[in-house]
Length: 299
Ligand code: ATP
Image (cartoon, rainbow, N blue to C red; front, side, top):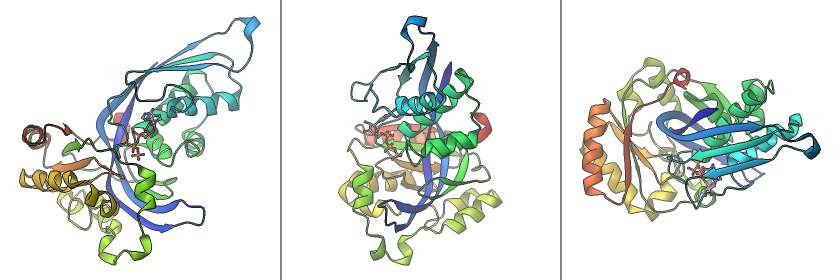
């Protein structure tokens, strides 16, 4: 079985408070974009003499991605197969294309699509809601990666509301090579010290999405990410990329997730591709890619 795991961006990202359990309550608008990891899943029967829980093996095209039980795709498969007592073996072949630790939820999306695939492959009968409930145990973004499309994400990321599609546009993704740890970024965010203006106006973003108003969606203060206050000062390339994307015609450019990937929204794919060529010339060390938004039903 072949599946594509899609990358996401955060059209806006707000952190409301730190909870007593250490997690943060967030309010963010999520959007799938046309950048994919490739997943192949193969089921095989075990000989009668070797009964026991199904074995899961994974191979991956990048040496620095864990290929054992620490891989989020393996964790996702294990969770479902153990719950239903699957005794067949599963082989996962993962082709990573989504940059790793980039704020694009690559690992979460691999986990989400593995859950969808394993559910079909072994006829486990879970509904999407049941998969989302279980996905939460793997990671906060996994339920959204099962729902996909454009969505409002609240709580720690598990309270999801589908939203009207982002109008068609061009999206330029640029991933600086500096590593960023999501845990550290949240750890260094002091929510109580933020001013009102530091928080994106998520409600205004929701209204603009409702109107299908791309310019309104891209307004500063609306398309914005509170985590940039932590990540950007340590990585000047983030601000440089944003300025350059805007100079090249982006309606706006902000950081996705905890970074360091920056995305720019352009009127159409042609403009995004032109800007991508320029950005590649000016920032050869940065991985850049032009694409479009992906709707829920496209997947
Ligand atoms: P998010 O946007 O949710 O913060 P991210 O883009 O920052 O996600 P990922 O690419 O999902 O981060 O990977 C984070 C870490 O998870 C990596 O350091 C990697 O070692 C580990 N990991 C486990 N499984 C996977 C996987 N299938 N793909 C990528 N990374 C994985």
